[in-house]
Image (cartoon, rainbow, N blue to C red; front, side):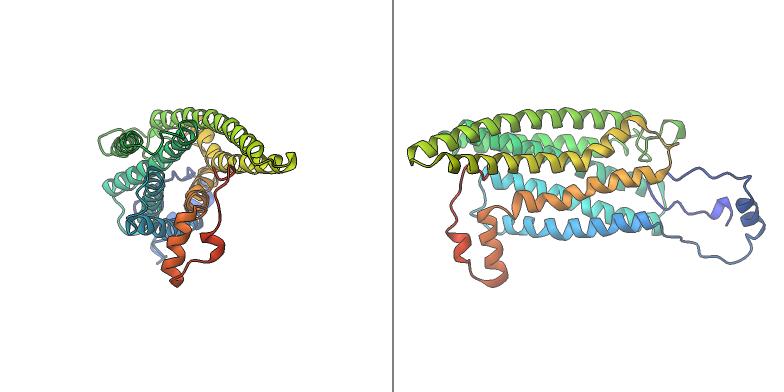
Length: 330
């Protein structure tokens, strides 16, 4: 297969090919021999499979929140925003796979990369918004359920989706490396500067989330201690409740960091000349964050569990309906 008929199998940059190697010389000589035109990259199949799982899982959360008028509190609006962002990210991975093999054009590449970048940006921003909402719900517990909180939530949603949309439009509006391959990042056609700016922004948001979760841990420990004193609980009960709350927050933040940190740091130090396998290996865990998000933020929620049980079997188990919220449920 000569260079004119070679298929660009992915928006992730491919490894450079040495035209002087014996394999390429042999391929040029035998270019008249019929060969399959499409060679599917196994990494693309894995990403497409992840996109399918992400889409199905988050579509359930979006439908539950959309079809239940009772789930209109600020917390559920933010969870719905997270699920919608992850749903679009999953769709973007699927569409990218289809376009890479069926519709190979620069315009399609710009659109799919823009969709994926905007979706993942909205997902990370939604996680930050949920963290802010949890902090406010604990710090301003007496005034949290007011109209002011609802207005603040809508403002956060407008800002995060507006910023994410702008990020997604950058490649289409000319902020790409199609005309100068030397400026490409590990994700073509995003430029190295764009990828570095997104990575730095992620690190700043992660630092803010870390600080907020530290404050949340302090508030949870203080609330658990007050509840223990009011109900004359034993010190061991207070310790267990506090440990559960801190463990939950550690799992949330640790999962987020484990999924996104490898790709973020790699985007800062690497460029298009690096082997594409490193890009795939660091990007795949980032997609897993969209698989885990519904489990952490949606399916653990008691109200969403009730709605899901009603949809699946038409009843609510007593263990779900009677479970009380504790300080560890943060």
